[in-house]
Amino acid sequence: MENWKIIGPLKNYQEGNKWIVEIETKPIALFKYENNYFALKNGCMHQGFPLAEGNLNKYMVECPLHGWVYDIRNGKCLSLENKFTISYQVRIKDENIEINLN
Image (cartoon, rainbow, N blue to C red; front, top):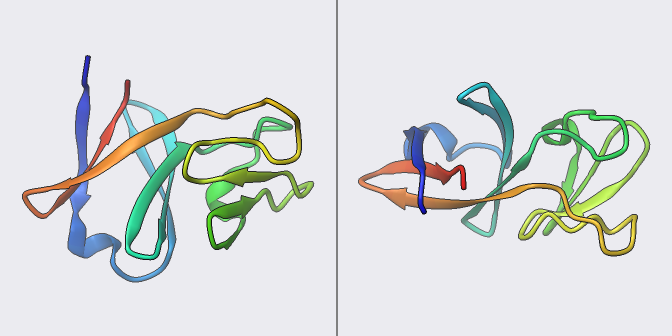
């Protein structure tokens, strides 16, 4: 089942490479790399620090608090074996960015 939510016009997410968005009280980290958009739960699995405040290096974001690293394409925690944070599908439709909450 799909549950796509509009987060805003694409033009609002052109400059920069990371943003914090909130959908239905869920904080989501939105990332842009090589003109592709990716979304993760905006909280490190370690202590919940906002991932959108971390350093983005290619497809990896590093939590600024203790350095845990995540792959923004699928939420895989590269600091722990076989652990994933929540990742969301992102699409562009009618010049808007949408995130699937399912």
